[in-house]
Image (cartoon, rainbow, N blue to C red; front, top):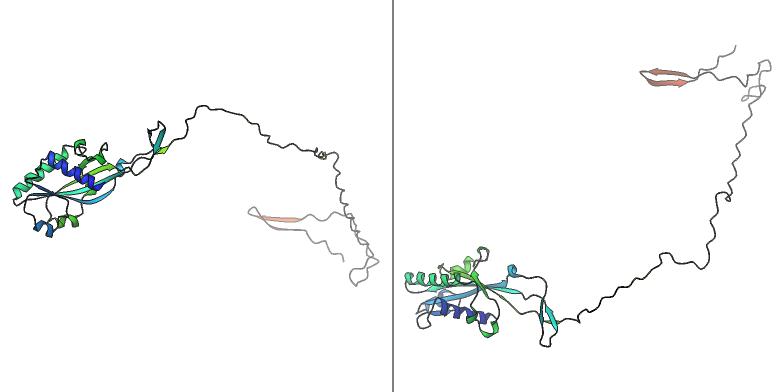
Length: 265
Protein backbone atom coordinates (compact mmCIF):
# COMPACT_ATOMS: atom_id res chain seq x y z
CA UNK A 1 0.00 0.00 0.00
CA UNK A 2 2.73 2.50 0.94
CA UNK A 3 4.58 2.13 -2.34
CA UNK A 4 1.31 2.74 -4.21
CA UNK A 5 0.82 6.02 -2.34
CA UNK A 6 4.44 7.00 -3.11
CA UNK A 7 3.75 6.50 -6.80
CA UNK A 8 0.52 8.49 -6.59
CA UNK A 9 2.23 11.35 -4.74
CA UNK A 10 5.10 11.46 -7.26
CA UNK A 11 2.65 11.55 -10.15
CA UNK A 12 0.71 14.31 -8.40
CA UNK A 13 3.83 16.49 -8.06
CA UNK A 14 4.87 15.83 -11.64
CA UNK A 15 1.54 16.87 -13.13
CA UNK A 16 0.32 19.55 -10.70
CA UNK A 17 3.36 21.64 -9.66
CA UNK A 18 4.60 20.71 -12.35
CA UNK A 19 7.97 18.99 -11.92
CA UNK A 20 9.30 17.81 -15.28
CA UNK A 21 11.38 14.65 -15.01
CA UNK A 22 13.98 16.14 -17.38
CA UNK A 23 14.87 18.99 -15.00
CA UNK A 24 13.81 18.03 -11.43
CA UNK A 25 14.32 14.79 -9.52
CA UNK A 26 11.94 13.39 -6.88
CA UNK A 27 13.39 11.25 -4.13
CA UNK A 28 11.98 9.40 -1.10
CA UNK A 29 15.31 9.10 0.76
CA UNK A 30 16.11 10.34 4.25
CA UNK A 31 17.56 13.85 3.81
CA UNK A 32 20.83 13.26 5.68
CA UNK A 33 24.26 14.72 4.97
CA UNK A 34 25.69 11.76 2.96
CA UNK A 35 22.72 11.81 0.59
CA UNK A 36 22.61 15.57 0.09
CA UNK A 37 26.35 15.63 -0.64
CA UNK A 38 25.83 13.57 -3.80
CA UNK A 39 23.04 15.72 -5.34
CA UNK A 40 23.78 17.24 -8.74
CA UNK A 41 20.32 18.43 -9.87
CA UNK A 42 17.37 20.22 -8.29
CA UNK A 43 15.58 17.64 -6.15
CA UNK A 44 12.36 17.47 -4.19
CA UNK A 45 12.68 15.00 -1.34
CA UNK A 46 9.50 13.37 0.04
CA UNK A 47 10.50 11.70 3.31
CA UNK A 48 7.94 9.43 5.03
CA UNK A 49 8.69 9.95 8.72
CA UNK A 50 5.53 8.61 10.40
CA UNK A 51 2.39 6.58 9.77
CA UNK A 52 -0.49 5.54 12.04
CA UNK A 53 -4.24 5.55 12.43
CA UNK A 54 -6.19 8.70 11.65
CA UNK A 55 -8.55 8.76 14.66
CA UNK A 56 -10.46 11.76 13.31
CA UNK A 57 -11.66 9.68 10.35
CA UNK A 58 -12.81 6.72 12.45
CA UNK A 59 -16.31 5.48 11.64
CA UNK A 60 -18.76 3.53 13.79
CA UNK A 61 -21.35 0.93 12.81
CA UNK A 62 -21.05 -1.44 9.85
CA UNK A 63 -20.90 -1.20 6.06
CA UNK A 64 -23.38 -3.08 3.89
CA UNK A 65 -23.34 -4.05 0.23
CA UNK A 66 -24.68 -6.61 -2.22
CA UNK A 67 -22.39 -9.48 -3.21
CA UNK A 68 -21.89 -11.01 -6.61
CA UNK A 69 -24.54 -13.65 -5.88
CA UNK A 70 -27.11 -11.00 -4.98
CA UNK A 71 -27.00 -11.65 -1.24
CA UNK A 72 -26.44 -8.89 1.22
CA UNK A 73 -23.20 -8.73 3.15
CA UNK A 74 -21.58 -6.58 5.83
CA UNK A 75 -18.18 -5.70 7.30
CA UNK A 76 -16.70 -3.46 9.96
CA UNK A 77 -15.60 0.02 8.78
CA UNK A 78 -12.19 0.09 7.17
CA UNK A 79 -9.47 1.68 9.30
CA UNK A 80 -8.04 4.93 7.99
CA UNK A 81 -4.23 5.19 7.96
CA UNK A 82 -2.40 8.54 7.98
CA UNK A 83 0.98 8.86 6.24
CA UNK A 84 3.03 11.95 7.16
CA UNK A 85 5.70 13.27 4.83
CA UNK A 86 8.43 15.90 5.17
CA UNK A 87 8.99 17.57 1.80
CA UNK A 88 12.20 19.55 1.27
CA UNK A 89 13.70 21.16 -1.81
CA UNK A 90 17.40 21.01 -2.70
CA UNK A 91 18.91 23.38 -5.26
CA UNK A 92 22.18 25.24 -5.68
CA UNK A 93 20.50 28.63 -5.34
CA UNK A 94 18.30 29.65 -2.38
CA UNK A 95 16.07 31.70 -4.68
CA UNK A 96 15.32 28.65 -6.82
CA UNK A 97 14.76 26.61 -3.67
CA UNK A 98 12.15 29.01 -2.28
CA UNK A 99 10.40 29.29 -5.65
CA UNK A 100 10.14 25.54 -6.03
CA UNK A 101 9.04 25.05 -2.39
CA UNK A 102 6.29 27.66 -2.86
CA UNK A 103 4.99 25.84 -5.96
CA UNK A 104 4.82 22.57 -3.99
CA UNK A 105 2.94 24.30 -1.15
CA UNK A 106 0.43 25.85 -3.57
CA UNK A 107 -0.28 22.48 -5.18
CA UNK A 108 -0.95 20.87 -1.80
CA UNK A 109 -3.23 23.68 -0.62
CA UNK A 110 -5.23 23.53 -3.86
CA UNK A 111 -6.36 19.91 -3.39
CA UNK A 112 -8.23 18.17 -0.60
CA UNK A 113 -7.65 14.73 -2.14
CA UNK A 114 -5.21 13.14 -4.51
CA UNK A 115 -6.86 13.27 -7.95
CA UNK A 116 -8.31 10.02 -9.23
CA UNK A 117 -6.14 10.30 -12.34
CA UNK A 118 -2.90 9.90 -10.36
CA UNK A 119 -4.01 6.87 -8.33
CA UNK A 120 -2.65 3.49 -9.46
CA UNK A 121 -5.04 0.64 -10.07
CA UNK A 122 -4.76 -0.87 -6.54
CA UNK A 123 -5.97 2.48 -5.10
CA UNK A 124 -8.73 3.10 -7.65
CA UNK A 125 -11.99 4.17 -6.05
CA UNK A 126 -10.41 5.04 -2.68
CA UNK A 127 -10.49 8.52 -1.19
CA UNK A 128 -6.92 9.67 -0.45
CA UNK A 129 -7.22 12.92 1.48
CA UNK A 130 -4.36 15.45 1.22
CA UNK A 131 -3.68 18.23 3.73
CA UNK A 132 -0.98 20.02 5.64
CA UNK A 133 0.00 18.31 8.89
CA UNK A 134 -1.59 19.57 12.10
CA UNK A 135 0.44 21.44 14.67
CA UNK A 136 0.38 18.46 17.04
CA UNK A 137 1.60 16.14 14.26
CA UNK A 138 4.68 18.04 13.14
CA UNK A 139 7.93 16.31 12.39
CA UNK A 140 10.25 16.16 15.44
CA UNK A 141 13.18 18.55 15.51
CA UNK A 142 15.66 15.66 15.57
CA UNK A 143 14.50 14.56 12.11
CA UNK A 144 14.33 18.09 10.74
CA UNK A 145 17.85 18.82 11.93
CA UNK A 146 19.14 15.97 9.76
CA UNK A 147 17.90 17.97 6.77
CA UNK A 148 20.00 20.97 7.82
CA UNK A 149 17.03 22.79 9.44
CA UNK A 150 15.74 23.71 5.99
CA UNK A 151 12.28 25.07 5.30
CA UNK A 152 9.90 22.22 4.55
CA UNK A 153 6.30 21.41 3.70
CA UNK A 154 4.76 18.79 5.98
CA UNK A 155 1.78 16.96 4.52
CA UNK A 156 -0.52 14.16 5.60
CA UNK A 157 -2.26 11.66 3.34
CA UNK A 158 -5.12 9.62 4.86
CA UNK A 159 -6.38 6.53 3.09
CA UNK A 160 -8.77 3.71 4.12
CA UNK A 161 -7.20 0.26 4.20
CA UNK A 162 -9.27 -2.81 3.31
CA UNK A 163 -8.23 -4.76 6.38
CA UNK A 164 -11.73 -6.06 7.18
CA UNK A 165 -13.48 -8.83 5.26
CA UNK A 166 -17.05 -9.10 4.01
CA UNK A 167 -19.45 -11.49 5.73
CA UNK A 168 -22.67 -12.82 4.34
CA UNK A 169 -25.84 -11.85 6.14
CA UNK A 170 -28.38 -14.43 7.20
CA UNK A 171 -31.78 -14.78 5.52
CA UNK A 172 -34.04 -11.77 5.76
CA UNK A 173 -36.83 -11.79 8.35
CA UNK A 174 -40.15 -12.32 6.56
CA UNK A 175 -42.63 -12.96 9.38
CA UNK A 176 -42.79 -12.11 13.07
CA UNK A 177 -45.07 -14.14 15.37
CA UNK A 178 -45.95 -13.47 18.99
CA UNK A 179 -47.15 -15.96 21.60
CA UNK A 180 -48.37 -15.63 25.18
CA UNK A 181 -47.48 -18.32 27.71
CA UNK A 182 -49.03 -18.36 31.18
CA UNK A 183 -46.71 -19.34 33.99
CA UNK A 184 -48.17 -20.19 37.43
CA UNK A 185 -46.51 -18.22 40.15
CA UNK A 186 -47.61 -20.63 42.96
CA UNK A 187 -47.31 -24.39 42.24
CA UNK A 188 -50.36 -26.51 43.01
CA UNK A 189 -50.03 -28.77 46.10
CA UNK A 190 -51.07 -32.44 45.76
CA UNK A 191 -52.50 -32.58 49.30
CA UNK A 192 -54.28 -29.81 51.17
CA UNK A 193 -52.25 -28.20 53.90
CA UNK A 194 -53.57 -28.54 57.45
CA UNK A 195 -55.48 -25.55 58.65
CA UNK A 196 -53.60 -23.29 60.97
CA UNK A 197 -54.99 -23.29 64.53
CA UNK A 198 -57.19 -20.35 65.39
CA UNK A 199 -56.72 -18.13 68.38
CA UNK A 200 -59.69 -19.69 70.17
CA UNK A 201 -58.40 -23.22 69.72
CA UNK A 202 -54.91 -22.43 70.93
CA UNK A 203 -54.66 -23.22 74.68
CA UNK A 204 -53.31 -20.52 76.85
CA UNK A 205 -50.39 -21.26 79.14
CA UNK A 206 -51.26 -21.79 82.79
CA UNK A 207 -50.78 -18.82 85.02
CA UNK A 208 -47.79 -18.95 87.33
CA UNK A 209 -48.94 -19.06 90.95
CA UNK A 210 -47.86 -16.12 93.06
CA UNK A 211 -45.59 -16.93 95.99
CA UNK A 212 -47.23 -16.92 99.43
CA UNK A 213 -46.54 -13.96 101.64
CA UNK A 214 -43.92 -14.51 104.30
CA UNK A 215 -45.45 -14.65 107.78
CA UNK A 216 -44.51 -11.92 110.21
CA UNK A 217 -42.53 -13.04 113.26
CA UNK A 218 -44.51 -13.35 116.42
CA UNK A 219 -44.01 -10.95 119.29
CA UNK A 220 -42.40 -13.64 121.40
CA UNK A 221 -39.96 -14.82 118.71
CA UNK A 222 -36.27 -14.81 119.48
CA UNK A 223 -34.01 -12.19 117.79
CA UNK A 224 -30.57 -13.61 117.36
CA UNK A 225 -29.48 -15.30 120.63
CA UNK A 226 -31.41 -12.89 122.88
CA UNK A 227 -34.65 -14.03 124.47
CA UNK A 228 -37.75 -12.02 123.88
CA UNK A 229 -39.04 -9.87 126.72
CA UNK A 230 -42.38 -11.22 127.81
CA UNK A 231 -43.42 -7.90 129.40
CA UNK A 232 -42.77 -5.88 126.18
CA UNK A 233 -45.96 -5.29 124.29
CA UNK A 234 -45.99 -6.66 120.78
CA UNK A 235 -45.61 -4.26 117.84
CA UNK A 236 -48.68 -3.52 115.97
CA UNK A 237 -48.36 -5.39 112.71
CA UNK A 238 -50.81 -3.17 110.84
CA UNK A 239 -49.22 0.18 111.83
CA UNK A 240 -48.33 2.42 108.89
CA UNK A 241 -44.59 3.05 108.37
CA UNK A 242 -43.39 6.60 108.96
CA UNK A 243 -43.44 8.93 105.97
CA UNK A 244 -40.10 9.31 104.10
CA UNK A 245 -38.09 12.45 104.53
CA UNK A 246 -37.15 14.36 101.38
CA UNK A 247 -34.99 17.42 101.19
CA UNK A 248 -34.35 19.44 98.05
CA UNK A 249 -31.68 21.98 97.40
CA UNK A 250 -32.10 24.27 94.40
CA UNK A 251 -34.70 21.92 92.99
CA UNK A 252 -32.46 18.82 93.36
CA UNK A 253 -33.31 15.91 95.62
CA UNK A 254 -30.33 15.53 97.97
CA UNK A 255 -31.64 13.11 100.60
CA UNK A 256 -34.44 10.64 100.94
CA UNK A 257 -35.11 8.20 103.74
CA UNK A 258 -37.39 7.22 106.56
CA UNK A 259 -36.96 8.40 110.13
CA UNK A 260 -35.87 5.85 112.65
CA UNK A 261 -38.68 4.65 114.95
CA UNK A 262 -38.61 6.19 118.41
CA UNK A 263 -36.78 4.17 121.01
CA UNK A 264 -38.76 2.95 123.94
CA UNK A 265 -37.30 3.16 127.41
